[in-house]
Length: 95
Image (tube, rainbow, N blue to C red; front, side, top):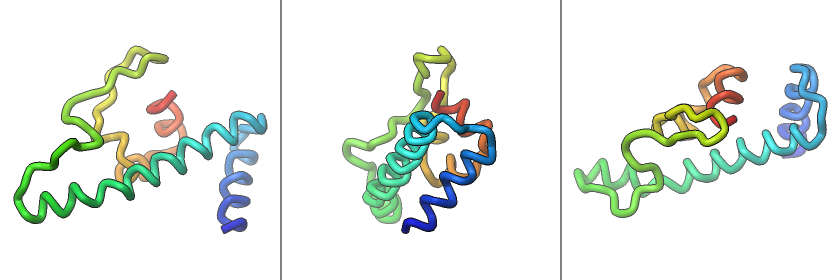
């Protein structure tokens, strides 16, 4: 696990993000998104059974990012989608 974290840290550092607080914020956000998406397995089970999910984590529609005042589709915040973005798009989506 330490090697993976070190690799992520090195990627930020070589990408020009050298402020320790900024790197920790970004890593925390990525870990949170991964854990959240993992917790959504109930949605895939409900979908498989043809049922509607009760109290979904991500609603349908968009979320207005208060820092950029832009609408972001909830679907794009899922780890399974977000992890495939390039670094700039990731940073600007949650910024």
